[in-house]
Amino acid sequence: RFGPDACGGYTNSSFYYHNSFLIADAKNAFVLETAGKFWAWKRIEGFYSISNGLTLEDDYDAIHPKAIDFAYQKGWVSKGKPFSFRSSFSDSFFTFFSKCKVRRKITSDLGADQRGDFGPREAMEILRQEGEPGNKKPFFPSGSNMGSVCLHATGPITPNGTTGSLVAELQPDVSKNRFWFTGTSIPSISLFIPAGFPGTSFMEKNFEAPGAHLDTSLWWTHEKFYREVQRFYPEAKGAVRRRIADLENAWFEESNRILKKGNDPKALDALSETAARSALQEYRFWNASLLNELKGKKPKRTFAPFYGLQWSVWNSKAKVNVS
Image (cartoon, rainbow, N blue to C red; front, top):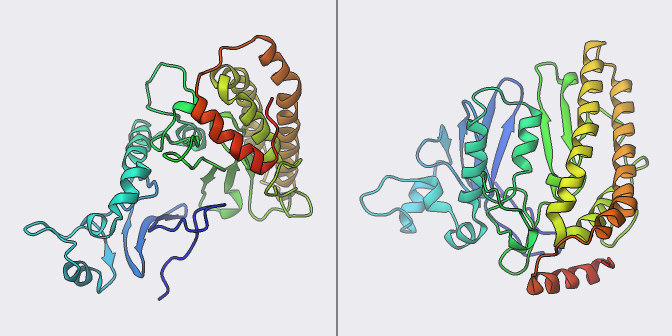
């Protein structure tokens, strides 16, 4: 009746676009795609990926009853070609510059490579993918573009970055569902924290929500470190990845232990609270001891003056001082 009307930007209040949605439980999964009040959907078999762009061609299971006629009336269907929901309703300018096809191909290929052995850890690594898979050269945020799954903002051409990540592990018994979220930007250097529903660990009274400027929240504590290490990112990433793996492994083991012992929701809440506190403590350590250690090694800094200028503007607005 109304069509989607959600703004995709935090500071950019005009950032609206047609979108796709993956809707799933433990038994069924669907992709729903919208364009204004028009829609199409399809049941998913196997792995499926979306990335800020329409994907359904003529392979939908159902479509808005007036969508095809509307597309023909507007001249959006090329003569002699079959109707395609994607090509008819996509914003070609937006989808080209957003590189949604590039990101979707990366995530689809990485998912297909799992050959059925796909779990939350594999999903996390897909979300952590930076640049082109298989590229052996060190990755610097200043060289990123909209084709990166783990997205780093650089300036006018790539004004957006990944601000949070979530992996949902769905079970037939919904009380056994697990949700792994970062609560921070840039998943490649973030911890995925376990949670379950219902849960009380992350209610507002227990968890500091980030504001518009630098504060002591989980998000901003991590963000401060990220903004400090952008110019020598490969060294910083190498220093934290082992620490991330060790903590996440411990949380996976404890989550599995809770499941085997009857899945007490209070025990899962306690794990979530402990993990969130540990993550915050870890990020504080990164900002203090680890950052000093990294800078003491005098790492080679990438030369990116325009990138640095853009981030100095963003840092000033957020009241972040980067040394």
